[in-house]
Amino acid sequence: MDAAELSARIRTLSQAAKVVDAMRSVAASHRRQANDAFMGFERYAAATREALGQALELLDAEEGRAPFEKPAGAASARRVVVLFSEHGFVGALNERLLDAALRVARDDPGPAELAALGTRGLRLCRDRGVAALALGPLPSTISGVGPAADRLTRDLFGAIAGGAIACVDLVFARRAGALGWRPEALRLFPPERGSGAGAARGEPPLRTLPAAALVARIIEEHCLAQVVWALGEAFACERAARLAAMEASQRSLRDELDELSRAERTARQEAITSELLEIAAGAEPLREAEG
Image (cartoon, rainbow, N blue to C red; front, side):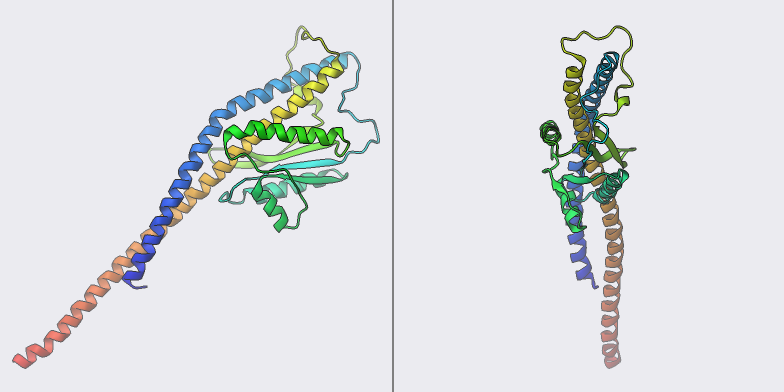
């Protein structure tokens, strides 16, 4: 490329770098918002885990059966809910989540259906020929996490009450390190008996409901809290993955701009040298004529 073409290419890449920098700033801002809100999500989930553990201890003391415990031989159709990303520029996040969800679906021999929350993930499922139930978009703002969790929990318990499913697994991205993440699988329903391992010891809590009814109410609250927590993790990980992708793009653009700038300087120097040589070559016949 000549100097003019190199200059045009540099201008184009400089504009792209500005767009990437703006996207990086937005992703960083959203990630900070998620980190600020996440402590509340985590405390909410921990509180419901402890409450469930205490309620199950009361139920065991009364020798009752938890409302989520099925009789032997009952059907166990499962739903594997995957929290994908809503937007792009997240690297291999959605691909790794889908692979993890397919592994979870294969873990138990019973029938399992895949359900996708997040536009990009649903598109990926279609591209790979994987049947998935569409659950809607992933929240685009941290304020949308609560309403989205409430809708998802109500839909899941509606399907459980209607007998369509008896088990729910949740697959989502969980933060690991500064900008890292890893796929995480969580048994959402029925909750595992160890969910309330941190239950307080001492005097039993005051209650006005039978233990079975209390467990039934706490289970739904516990599942809502787990979904809120998982959605908060998914929201933060999507922004972290986008931030990492934008930083990688920035480095790549900077390297290419540096290379193009060097090539432009070389091309300009070569053009100047060529012009000087042409001037010198044109001046030589004049000197000979004058001589």
